[in-house]
Length: 287
Image 1 (tube, one colour):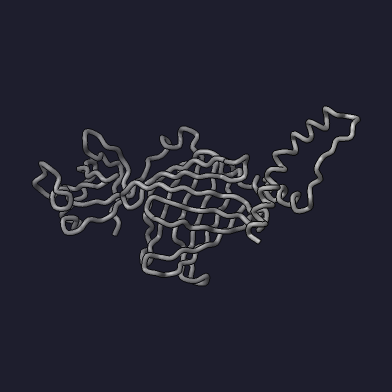
Image 2 (spheres, rainbow, N blue to C red):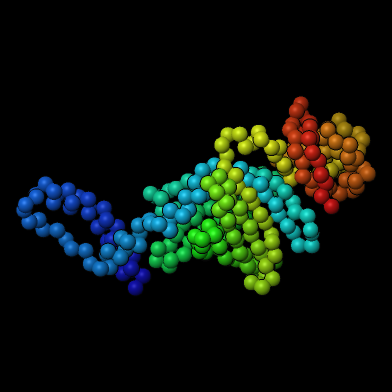
């Protein structure tokens, strides 16, 4: 049965490619009868199923470049960890699928991910997949779109490294042409889902990055005790960003008083690297 289905799929594709040629030939022989192959109902169904339509057009909101503000809640914590990123979405295969490329950071380390989103005409549902640089598996979600509220709702799941089967619900609310918000809920069953992540997407018009400071989630520690930085012989505040430790200026936080000599913590920071040091404009240690 699988071989037969694949054969009809290929036949439908070949026929779809051949139709323009037949049409042209018919035009050249106007007024004459031309022998043209007749499509079967199954061939017509395959062509229809493979053609993008109105449901695919609902995904136009994704297209473009976006600045992303992320918040992530971990079990047992009330305050989220914040970070930033950016993504680019574009149509592929004649507007059948949207491919996403995301770059940012997670736990102070570089992070990247990719997804493919589309609408399945046969199963009549939206789908999206996710792959990233910190995993070796793919997650797939299936969903629907409510046009009245301009909201997509996807559900899916994955298995944790400890063997737990986790359920996920993702709600994407289209605020306007230049903004949409994704909220993700996670739990071990459909009844105990808790808010896990929120991403605000704002269209990158070339000024978004300059309009507000970029907040990074980084690891903060002691330059001498934690990172053993060359030339440092006292307890000095430092951060590790993109795999590199930097001494920190622009804040009065004491590495020793905050207990960073014993163990590093995470911090939400903004600023920039100048002359080998991180010059902070904001520095907030996480509990």
